Image (tube, rainbow, N blue to C red):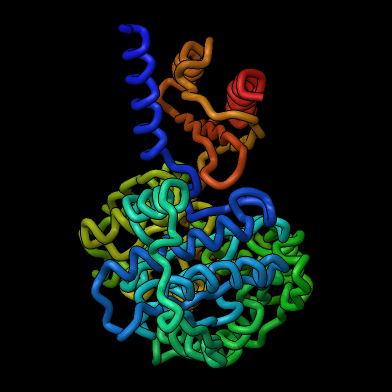
Length: 472
């Protein structure tokens, strides 16, 4: 009897833990391979139904709850769009389809069109065979973890059939034809009215993604001569050896065309990597540094603070400290950077990967707006991007991404803590190491910083080899 009671208690605990454990959402929405769990039509439709049920429980500015949906250019976007729309319509929610548009554009239009939620269908920088779902609230910010857990609970534990709308209350769907034009105007407003880009030559890589129409229009309408790469999407070539993950392509083109600057966006254009006129890559940390220093000089950096993540280079901290600027670090994910910024009234934050948030203008990372802010600094100061970029010196940093089959608390892996302690002792306070599971891929990331590149490469490989051996 005691054994049976113990088993029941164990089952109840497991069930309770299962209810709170995330099953769909990672660090940036839901993501996976198209037509495999969780990006299957049935699961996606249930996500739409769960969203519809939640919206129906809350007061709306509209007669019926309204959701806007945008996507990038990958083939599976059509399938996911239809499944989401079906789920929402079945709950009596109206849907407005925006077509291919950058993720930050959906955040903007969710607010601008007075929608109750906005959904982005994108797997960001992943290859075409993946897809994902990101959700914005009516304020244009990504929904909190609590709502993600509620959606998961509805998807996995609730029979939605009794909650469906009546036959006369099914939602309608329609396409919005001018969404891209609205976003172009919005993005251009981030560039100072007293300046143009006349006389500037820009190489722009759209990664064959969501920005393939809007990004060229933004920079060309401001007067720049624009050499455009990656603007011929075919459903399969998004992020294919192009965009923010492959900035070397833009670097070569900048030198070839003697351009003033290169701009490399990712598939959903919420991140950017830039290239100076000498072909040198300017990543998110350097963009943050350039903009933070300029805002500080203009007394426009609230509390003299910038927000970064655990992956940002220690060189950023060093430069900011030298100029009286604080750096606050958050967990990886632009969502967590934004949460910290909103909580404490900061205006600038971002990630090394190129998610840069100017909270005075955007609710999430925006590659075009980040690039426009850097171009504005160049215009105001009269300095080239290479001159601005040389102010920050990176500390040597090694990042190894190791594929794993299972996730486990790394501190429980035999020998892990001892190895970390030994490495930290060798670094002698002149560097750091950081280990985390990816929120979007079956990968564990090992980051080591220190003054000696050969040494930190060896340390990173030691940790990665241990983790691969134990978790594969």
